[in-house]
Length: 460
Image (cartoon, rainbow, N blue to C red; front, top):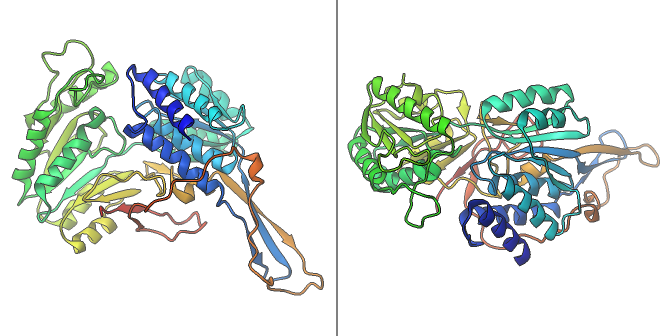
Protein backbone atom coordinates (compact mmCIF):
# COMPACT_ATOMS: atom_id res chain seq x y z
CA UNK A 1 0.00 0.00 0.00
CA UNK A 2 2.66 2.52 1.01
CA UNK A 3 4.69 1.66 -2.07
CA UNK A 4 1.68 2.34 -4.32
CA UNK A 5 0.94 5.65 -2.57
CA UNK A 6 4.54 6.75 -2.98
CA UNK A 7 4.57 5.77 -6.66
CA UNK A 8 1.40 7.75 -7.46
CA UNK A 9 2.66 10.77 -5.52
CA UNK A 10 5.97 10.59 -7.38
CA UNK A 11 4.11 10.46 -10.72
CA UNK A 12 2.23 13.68 -10.06
CA UNK A 13 5.35 15.37 -8.63
CA UNK A 14 7.27 14.77 -11.84
CA UNK A 15 4.35 15.93 -14.00
CA UNK A 16 3.83 19.29 -12.29
CA UNK A 17 7.46 19.92 -11.38
CA UNK A 18 7.16 20.20 -7.60
CA UNK A 19 7.08 17.80 -4.65
CA UNK A 20 3.61 16.62 -3.69
CA UNK A 21 2.49 14.84 -0.54
CA UNK A 22 0.57 11.58 -0.65
CA UNK A 23 -2.24 13.33 1.20
CA UNK A 24 -2.72 15.98 -1.53
CA UNK A 25 -6.26 16.04 -2.87
CA UNK A 26 -6.01 14.46 -6.30
CA UNK A 27 -3.55 11.75 -5.23
CA UNK A 28 -5.70 10.91 -2.20
CA UNK A 29 -8.82 10.59 -4.37
CA UNK A 30 -6.97 8.36 -6.85
CA UNK A 31 -5.78 6.09 -4.04
CA UNK A 32 -9.34 5.96 -2.68
CA UNK A 33 -10.60 4.76 -6.08
CA UNK A 34 -8.14 1.86 -6.09
CA UNK A 35 -8.95 0.94 -2.49
CA UNK A 36 -12.71 1.03 -3.03
CA UNK A 37 -12.69 -1.05 -6.20
CA UNK A 38 -10.23 -3.50 -4.68
CA UNK A 39 -12.98 -4.30 -2.21
CA UNK A 40 -15.55 -4.45 -5.01
CA UNK A 41 -13.42 -7.12 -6.74
CA UNK A 42 -14.18 -9.39 -3.79
CA UNK A 43 -17.90 -8.63 -3.94
CA UNK A 44 -18.55 -9.41 -7.61
CA UNK A 45 -20.74 -12.37 -6.80
CA UNK A 46 -22.91 -14.29 -9.17
CA UNK A 47 -26.26 -15.72 -8.19
CA UNK A 48 -28.33 -18.87 -8.37
CA UNK A 49 -31.91 -18.27 -9.52
CA UNK A 50 -34.75 -20.79 -9.06
CA UNK A 51 -36.21 -21.46 -12.49
CA UNK A 52 -39.96 -21.17 -12.98
CA UNK A 53 -39.76 -24.05 -15.46
CA UNK A 54 -37.27 -26.58 -14.11
CA UNK A 55 -33.91 -26.76 -12.45
CA UNK A 56 -31.98 -23.63 -11.62
CA UNK A 57 -30.14 -20.80 -13.34
CA UNK A 58 -26.64 -19.66 -12.52
CA UNK A 59 -25.50 -16.18 -13.53
CA UNK A 60 -21.79 -15.50 -13.16
CA UNK A 61 -20.23 -12.10 -13.99
CA UNK A 62 -17.38 -12.28 -16.47
CA UNK A 63 -15.02 -9.51 -17.62
CA UNK A 64 -16.45 -7.74 -20.64
CA UNK A 65 -13.03 -7.78 -22.33
CA UNK A 66 -10.42 -5.21 -23.29
CA UNK A 67 -11.39 -1.66 -22.37
CA UNK A 68 -10.22 1.50 -24.15
CA UNK A 69 -10.21 4.50 -21.79
CA UNK A 70 -9.94 8.12 -22.88
CA UNK A 71 -9.25 10.87 -20.33
CA UNK A 72 -8.96 14.65 -20.24
CA UNK A 73 -6.02 16.70 -19.04
CA UNK A 74 -7.55 18.68 -16.15
CA UNK A 75 -7.27 15.95 -13.47
CA UNK A 76 -4.59 13.62 -14.84
CA UNK A 77 -4.39 11.37 -11.75
CA UNK A 78 -8.00 11.18 -10.59
CA UNK A 79 -9.63 10.66 -13.99
CA UNK A 80 -7.34 7.87 -15.06
CA UNK A 81 -7.77 6.14 -11.69
CA UNK A 82 -11.53 6.12 -12.26
CA UNK A 83 -10.94 4.14 -15.45
CA UNK A 84 -8.24 1.73 -14.33
CA UNK A 85 -9.60 0.77 -10.90
CA UNK A 86 -13.03 -0.59 -11.96
CA UNK A 87 -11.48 -2.29 -15.00
CA UNK A 88 -9.02 -4.18 -12.79
CA UNK A 89 -11.75 -5.02 -10.28
CA UNK A 90 -13.83 -6.62 -13.04
CA UNK A 91 -10.83 -8.45 -14.50
CA UNK A 92 -10.56 -6.36 -17.68
CA UNK A 93 -7.31 -5.34 -19.35
CA UNK A 94 -7.35 -1.59 -20.02
CA UNK A 95 -5.67 0.49 -22.71
CA UNK A 96 -5.62 4.17 -21.74
CA UNK A 97 -5.30 6.99 -24.21
CA UNK A 98 -4.52 10.00 -21.95
CA UNK A 99 -4.42 13.61 -23.04
CA UNK A 100 -1.28 14.69 -24.92
CA UNK A 101 -0.94 17.49 -22.35
CA UNK A 102 -0.34 15.16 -19.38
CA UNK A 103 1.58 12.13 -20.71
CA UNK A 104 4.12 11.64 -17.92
CA UNK A 105 1.60 11.25 -15.11
CA UNK A 106 -0.25 8.49 -16.95
CA UNK A 107 2.92 6.53 -17.64
CA UNK A 108 4.01 6.65 -14.02
CA UNK A 109 0.54 5.67 -12.80
CA UNK A 110 0.76 2.59 -15.04
CA UNK A 111 4.13 1.88 -13.43
CA UNK A 112 2.55 2.36 -9.99
CA UNK A 113 -0.10 -0.23 -10.91
CA UNK A 114 2.62 -2.71 -11.79
CA UNK A 115 4.35 -2.01 -8.48
CA UNK A 116 1.01 -2.60 -6.77
CA UNK A 117 0.65 -6.07 -8.29
CA UNK A 118 -1.08 -5.65 -11.66
CA UNK A 119 0.20 -8.28 -14.14
CA UNK A 120 2.36 -7.03 -16.98
CA UNK A 121 0.30 -5.81 -19.91
CA UNK A 122 -2.98 -5.51 -18.02
CA UNK A 123 -2.63 -1.71 -17.76
CA UNK A 124 -1.28 -0.05 -20.90
CA UNK A 125 -0.84 3.56 -22.04
CA UNK A 126 -1.11 4.44 -25.71
CA UNK A 127 0.19 7.90 -26.61
CA UNK A 128 -0.03 9.84 -29.82
CA UNK A 129 -2.28 12.22 -31.76
CA UNK A 130 -5.97 11.54 -31.26
CA UNK A 131 -6.70 11.37 -34.98
CA UNK A 132 -4.19 8.52 -35.33
CA UNK A 133 -4.60 6.55 -32.09
CA UNK A 134 -8.34 6.73 -31.47
CA UNK A 135 -9.58 5.29 -34.81
CA UNK A 136 -7.35 2.22 -34.35
CA UNK A 137 -8.77 1.51 -30.90
CA UNK A 138 -12.34 2.12 -32.02
CA UNK A 139 -11.99 -0.19 -35.04
CA UNK A 140 -10.43 -3.06 -33.06
CA UNK A 141 -12.88 -5.91 -32.48
CA UNK A 142 -10.85 -6.99 -29.44
CA UNK A 143 -11.81 -3.77 -27.64
CA UNK A 144 -15.26 -4.49 -26.19
CA UNK A 145 -15.87 -1.37 -24.10
CA UNK A 146 -14.90 2.30 -24.19
CA UNK A 147 -14.94 4.80 -21.36
CA UNK A 148 -14.55 8.53 -21.97
CA UNK A 149 -14.22 11.60 -19.79
CA UNK A 150 -14.36 14.49 -22.20
CA UNK A 151 -16.55 16.85 -24.18
CA UNK A 152 -20.02 16.07 -25.49
CA UNK A 153 -18.76 16.64 -29.04
CA UNK A 154 -16.07 13.97 -28.71
CA UNK A 155 -18.49 11.66 -26.90
CA UNK A 156 -20.95 11.74 -29.80
CA UNK A 157 -18.15 10.97 -32.27
CA UNK A 158 -16.95 7.97 -30.24
CA UNK A 159 -20.49 6.65 -29.77
CA UNK A 160 -21.00 6.66 -33.53
CA UNK A 161 -17.72 4.77 -34.00
CA UNK A 162 -18.52 2.34 -31.17
CA UNK A 163 -21.74 1.35 -32.91
CA UNK A 164 -19.74 -0.06 -35.84
CA UNK A 165 -18.33 -2.85 -33.66
CA UNK A 166 -21.09 -2.93 -31.02
CA UNK A 167 -18.85 -1.76 -28.21
CA UNK A 168 -20.24 -0.87 -24.81
CA UNK A 169 -19.77 2.76 -23.85
CA UNK A 170 -19.55 4.75 -20.62
CA UNK A 171 -19.58 8.51 -21.15
CA UNK A 172 -18.86 11.30 -18.67
CA UNK A 173 -19.35 14.40 -20.79
CA UNK A 174 -19.64 18.16 -20.44
CA UNK A 175 -21.77 19.94 -17.87
CA UNK A 176 -23.67 23.21 -17.41
CA UNK A 177 -24.10 22.89 -13.65
CA UNK A 178 -26.68 25.28 -12.15
CA UNK A 179 -26.75 26.52 -8.55
CA UNK A 180 -30.03 27.56 -6.89
CA UNK A 181 -29.64 29.70 -3.75
CA UNK A 182 -32.91 30.00 -1.80
CA UNK A 183 -33.88 32.96 0.35
CA UNK A 184 -33.45 30.99 3.60
CA UNK A 185 -29.91 29.80 2.80
CA UNK A 186 -26.83 30.79 4.78
CA UNK A 187 -25.80 33.32 2.15
CA UNK A 188 -22.27 33.95 3.38
CA UNK A 189 -21.48 30.23 3.58
CA UNK A 190 -23.11 29.56 0.21
CA UNK A 191 -21.17 32.35 -1.51
CA UNK A 192 -17.90 31.19 0.04
CA UNK A 193 -18.43 27.65 -1.25
CA UNK A 194 -19.58 28.87 -4.66
CA UNK A 195 -16.46 31.01 -5.07
CA UNK A 196 -14.08 28.19 -4.10
CA UNK A 197 -15.62 25.66 -6.46
CA UNK A 198 -16.26 28.11 -9.30
CA UNK A 199 -12.68 29.39 -9.47
CA UNK A 200 -10.73 26.25 -8.60
CA UNK A 201 -8.56 25.05 -11.46
CA UNK A 202 -9.47 28.40 -13.10
CA UNK A 203 -12.98 27.06 -13.65
CA UNK A 204 -11.72 24.17 -15.79
CA UNK A 205 -13.77 21.48 -14.03
CA UNK A 206 -16.65 19.53 -15.58
CA UNK A 207 -18.79 19.69 -12.41
CA UNK A 208 -17.93 23.33 -11.62
CA UNK A 209 -20.94 25.57 -10.86
CA UNK A 210 -21.60 27.53 -14.04
CA UNK A 211 -24.95 29.31 -13.58
CA UNK A 212 -26.06 30.94 -10.34
CA UNK A 213 -29.79 31.50 -9.73
CA UNK A 214 -30.19 33.50 -6.51
CA UNK A 215 -33.42 34.52 -4.79
CA UNK A 216 -34.15 38.24 -5.05
CA UNK A 217 -34.18 38.66 -1.26
CA UNK A 218 -30.53 37.62 -0.92
CA UNK A 219 -29.16 38.34 -4.40
CA UNK A 220 -27.43 41.60 -3.41
CA UNK A 221 -25.60 40.07 -0.43
CA UNK A 222 -24.66 36.91 -2.37
CA UNK A 223 -23.26 38.97 -5.25
CA UNK A 224 -21.23 41.14 -2.90
CA UNK A 225 -19.65 38.08 -1.29
CA UNK A 226 -18.84 36.55 -4.68
CA UNK A 227 -17.19 39.78 -5.80
CA UNK A 228 -15.14 39.95 -2.59
CA UNK A 229 -14.01 36.36 -3.04
CA UNK A 230 -13.07 36.90 -6.70
CA UNK A 231 -11.04 40.02 -5.89
CA UNK A 232 -9.22 38.24 -3.06
CA UNK A 233 -7.83 35.50 -5.30
CA UNK A 234 -4.12 35.68 -6.13
CA UNK A 235 -3.21 34.86 -9.73
CA UNK A 236 0.18 33.41 -10.44
CA UNK A 237 2.35 30.37 -10.99
CA UNK A 238 0.50 27.28 -9.75
CA UNK A 239 3.76 26.00 -8.25
CA UNK A 240 3.95 29.08 -6.00
CA UNK A 241 2.52 28.46 -2.53
CA UNK A 242 0.98 31.95 -2.46
CA UNK A 243 -1.04 31.43 -5.65
CA UNK A 244 -4.76 30.71 -5.29
CA UNK A 245 -5.68 30.58 -9.01
CA UNK A 246 -3.50 29.66 -11.93
CA UNK A 247 -3.83 30.26 -15.68
CA UNK A 248 -6.04 28.63 -18.24
CA UNK A 249 -4.37 25.79 -20.06
CA UNK A 250 -4.61 26.94 -23.68
CA UNK A 251 -4.41 30.30 -25.40
CA UNK A 252 -7.50 29.35 -27.41
CA UNK A 253 -9.46 28.73 -24.21
CA UNK A 254 -8.34 32.06 -22.73
CA UNK A 255 -9.50 33.79 -25.90
CA UNK A 256 -12.83 31.97 -25.79
CA UNK A 257 -13.45 32.96 -22.16
CA UNK A 258 -12.54 36.56 -22.94
CA UNK A 259 -14.95 36.68 -25.89
CA UNK A 260 -17.75 35.04 -23.90
CA UNK A 261 -17.34 37.57 -21.08
CA UNK A 262 -17.48 40.52 -23.50
CA UNK A 263 -20.54 39.04 -25.22
CA UNK A 264 -22.34 38.62 -21.88
CA UNK A 265 -21.72 42.25 -20.96
CA UNK A 266 -22.98 43.29 -24.41
CA UNK A 267 -26.16 41.31 -23.68
CA UNK A 268 -26.86 43.53 -20.67
CA UNK A 269 -24.95 41.94 -17.76
CA UNK A 270 -22.86 43.96 -15.33
CA UNK A 271 -19.23 42.94 -14.80
CA UNK A 272 -18.52 43.55 -11.10
CA UNK A 273 -15.14 41.82 -10.83
CA UNK A 274 -12.47 40.73 -13.29
CA UNK A 275 -13.45 40.56 -16.93
CA UNK A 276 -10.02 40.96 -18.49
CA UNK A 277 -6.49 39.64 -18.70
CA UNK A 278 -4.41 40.74 -15.70
CA UNK A 279 -2.07 43.57 -16.62
CA UNK A 280 0.77 42.27 -14.43
CA UNK A 281 0.81 38.83 -16.09
CA UNK A 282 2.24 38.99 -19.60
CA UNK A 283 3.19 35.29 -19.63
CA UNK A 284 0.75 32.44 -19.35
CA UNK A 285 -2.90 32.29 -20.36
CA UNK A 286 -4.33 34.18 -17.38
CA UNK A 287 -7.83 35.60 -17.09
CA UNK A 288 -9.13 37.32 -13.98
CA UNK A 289 -11.77 35.59 -11.82
CA UNK A 290 -14.96 37.25 -12.99
CA UNK A 291 -18.39 37.90 -11.41
CA UNK A 292 -21.25 38.96 -13.70
CA UNK A 293 -24.59 40.21 -12.33
CA UNK A 294 -28.03 40.61 -13.93
CA UNK A 295 -27.23 38.06 -16.60
CA UNK A 296 -30.23 37.46 -18.89
CA UNK A 297 -31.37 33.91 -19.61
CA UNK A 298 -30.88 34.58 -23.32
CA UNK A 299 -27.13 35.11 -22.90
CA UNK A 300 -24.99 32.37 -24.43
CA UNK A 301 -23.10 31.91 -21.17
CA UNK A 302 -26.32 30.49 -19.64
CA UNK A 303 -26.33 27.74 -22.28
CA UNK A 304 -22.68 27.07 -23.12
CA UNK A 305 -20.09 25.76 -20.69
CA UNK A 306 -17.49 28.52 -20.14
CA UNK A 307 -14.84 26.15 -18.74
CA UNK A 308 -13.20 29.19 -17.24
CA UNK A 309 -13.41 31.59 -14.27
CA UNK A 310 -16.73 33.24 -15.21
CA UNK A 311 -19.57 33.34 -12.65
CA UNK A 312 -22.88 34.55 -14.18
CA UNK A 313 -25.51 35.49 -11.56
CA UNK A 314 -29.25 35.75 -12.25
CA UNK A 315 -32.18 36.49 -9.92
CA UNK A 316 -35.39 34.51 -9.29
CA UNK A 317 -38.47 35.00 -7.14
CA UNK A 318 -40.22 31.62 -7.38
CA UNK A 319 -38.53 28.26 -6.81
CA UNK A 320 -40.47 26.50 -9.56
CA UNK A 321 -39.31 29.20 -11.98
CA UNK A 322 -35.71 28.76 -10.81
CA UNK A 323 -35.89 24.99 -11.37
CA UNK A 324 -37.34 25.46 -14.84
CA UNK A 325 -34.52 27.84 -15.75
CA UNK A 326 -31.89 25.58 -14.18
CA UNK A 327 -33.19 22.67 -16.30
CA UNK A 328 -33.35 24.70 -19.51
CA UNK A 329 -30.36 23.02 -21.20
CA UNK A 330 -30.10 19.44 -22.52
CA UNK A 331 -27.09 18.86 -20.26
CA UNK A 332 -27.29 17.28 -16.83
CA UNK A 333 -24.01 16.37 -15.16
CA UNK A 334 -24.26 18.10 -11.76
CA UNK A 335 -26.56 20.57 -10.02
CA UNK A 336 -26.49 22.26 -6.63
CA UNK A 337 -28.87 23.93 -4.20
CA UNK A 338 -28.58 25.90 -0.97
CA UNK A 339 -31.38 26.12 1.59
CA UNK A 340 -32.03 25.75 5.32
CA UNK A 341 -35.41 24.07 4.72
CA UNK A 342 -35.77 20.31 4.55
CA UNK A 343 -38.85 20.74 2.35
CA UNK A 344 -36.96 22.90 -0.14
CA UNK A 345 -33.99 20.56 -0.01
CA UNK A 346 -36.28 17.72 -1.09
CA UNK A 347 -37.78 19.93 -3.81
CA UNK A 348 -34.31 20.79 -5.10
CA UNK A 349 -33.22 17.17 -5.02
CA UNK A 350 -36.28 16.05 -6.98
CA UNK A 351 -36.51 19.07 -9.25
CA UNK A 352 -32.94 19.53 -10.47
CA UNK A 353 -32.45 17.42 -13.59
CA UNK A 354 -28.89 16.13 -13.36
CA UNK A 355 -26.93 12.95 -12.79
CA UNK A 356 -25.72 14.21 -9.40
CA UNK A 357 -26.98 16.80 -6.95
CA UNK A 358 -25.40 18.51 -3.95
CA UNK A 359 -27.49 20.21 -1.27
CA UNK A 360 -25.49 22.80 0.73
CA UNK A 361 -22.31 21.20 -0.55
CA UNK A 362 -20.23 20.78 -3.70
CA UNK A 363 -18.57 17.57 -2.49
CA UNK A 364 -20.45 15.18 -4.76
CA UNK A 365 -17.64 12.91 -5.98
CA UNK A 366 -17.30 9.76 -3.86
CA UNK A 367 -15.77 6.40 -4.72
CA UNK A 368 -18.79 4.58 -3.28
CA UNK A 369 -21.47 6.58 -5.14
CA UNK A 370 -22.34 6.83 -8.85
CA UNK A 371 -20.60 9.64 -10.72
CA UNK A 372 -21.89 10.77 -14.10
CA UNK A 373 -24.56 12.65 -15.98
CA UNK A 374 -27.75 12.33 -17.97
CA UNK A 375 -28.89 13.79 -21.27
CA UNK A 376 -26.01 15.29 -23.24
CA UNK A 377 -23.74 14.92 -20.20
CA UNK A 378 -23.34 11.16 -20.13
CA UNK A 379 -24.75 7.69 -20.43
CA UNK A 380 -24.38 3.96 -19.86
CA UNK A 381 -22.57 3.54 -16.61
CA UNK A 382 -21.34 6.10 -14.12
CA UNK A 383 -17.73 6.39 -13.09
CA UNK A 384 -17.88 5.15 -9.50
CA UNK A 385 -19.89 3.08 -7.06
CA UNK A 386 -21.05 -0.53 -7.16
CA UNK A 387 -23.10 -0.04 -10.31
CA UNK A 388 -19.97 1.04 -12.15
CA UNK A 389 -18.21 -2.27 -11.47
CA UNK A 390 -21.13 -4.19 -12.96
CA UNK A 391 -20.93 -2.23 -16.22
CA UNK A 392 -17.47 -3.69 -16.84
CA UNK A 393 -18.83 -7.25 -16.72
CA UNK A 394 -21.29 -9.37 -18.65
CA UNK A 395 -23.44 -12.07 -17.10
CA UNK A 396 -24.60 -15.06 -19.13
CA UNK A 397 -26.96 -17.42 -17.29
CA UNK A 398 -26.41 -21.19 -17.41
CA UNK A 399 -29.53 -23.39 -17.05
CA UNK A 400 -29.24 -26.56 -14.97
CA UNK A 401 -32.19 -28.98 -15.32
CA UNK A 402 -33.50 -30.90 -12.33
CA UNK A 403 -33.16 -34.69 -12.28
CA UNK A 404 -36.87 -35.30 -12.87
CA UNK A 405 -37.62 -32.15 -14.86
CA UNK A 406 -39.72 -30.65 -12.06
CA UNK A 407 -39.41 -27.11 -10.80
CA UNK A 408 -37.42 -27.12 -7.58
CA UNK A 409 -36.36 -24.51 -5.08
CA UNK A 410 -32.68 -24.85 -4.12
CA UNK A 411 -32.26 -26.22 -0.61
CA UNK A 412 -30.18 -23.24 0.48
CA UNK A 413 -29.14 -19.90 -0.98
CA UNK A 414 -26.22 -20.52 -3.27
CA UNK A 415 -24.10 -17.57 -4.24
CA UNK A 416 -21.76 -18.43 -7.06
CA UNK A 417 -18.52 -16.51 -6.95
CA UNK A 418 -17.32 -14.53 -9.93
CA UNK A 419 -14.27 -15.38 -12.04
CA UNK A 420 -11.33 -16.88 -10.19
CA UNK A 421 -9.77 -13.98 -8.28
CA UNK A 422 -6.32 -15.26 -9.27
CA UNK A 423 -7.10 -13.96 -12.75
CA UNK A 424 -7.46 -10.45 -11.32
CA UNK A 425 -4.65 -8.26 -10.03
CA UNK A 426 -4.16 -8.67 -6.30
CA UNK A 427 -5.39 -5.49 -4.67
CA UNK A 428 -5.90 -4.82 -0.95
CA UNK A 429 -9.28 -4.46 0.73
CA UNK A 430 -10.62 -0.92 1.21
CA UNK A 431 -10.07 1.07 4.35
CA UNK A 432 -12.68 0.73 7.02
CA UNK A 433 -14.54 3.75 8.26
CA UNK A 434 -17.89 5.44 8.30
CA UNK A 435 -19.18 6.00 4.73
CA UNK A 436 -20.20 9.42 3.55
CA UNK A 437 -23.87 10.25 3.65
CA UNK A 438 -25.58 9.97 0.30
CA UNK A 439 -28.95 8.81 -0.92
CA UNK A 440 -30.33 7.54 -4.18
CA UNK A 441 -33.00 9.95 -5.35
CA UNK A 442 -34.10 8.38 -8.63
CA UNK A 443 -34.64 4.82 -9.76
CA UNK A 444 -34.17 1.61 -7.78
CA UNK A 445 -30.75 -0.06 -7.55
CA UNK A 446 -31.29 -2.93 -9.98
CA UNK A 447 -29.74 -4.37 -13.14
CA UNK A 448 -32.42 -2.62 -15.20
CA UNK A 449 -31.03 -0.40 -17.93
CA UNK A 450 -34.26 1.59 -17.84
CA UNK A 451 -33.54 3.16 -14.44
CA UNK A 452 -30.79 5.33 -13.06
CA UNK A 453 -29.47 5.99 -9.57
CA UNK A 454 -28.91 9.68 -8.90
CA UNK A 455 -26.94 10.44 -5.71
CA UNK A 456 -27.79 13.57 -3.76
CA UNK A 457 -25.01 14.53 -1.38
CA UNK A 458 -26.07 16.06 1.93
CA UNK A 459 -23.50 17.38 4.41
CA UNK A 460 -23.43 15.74 7.82
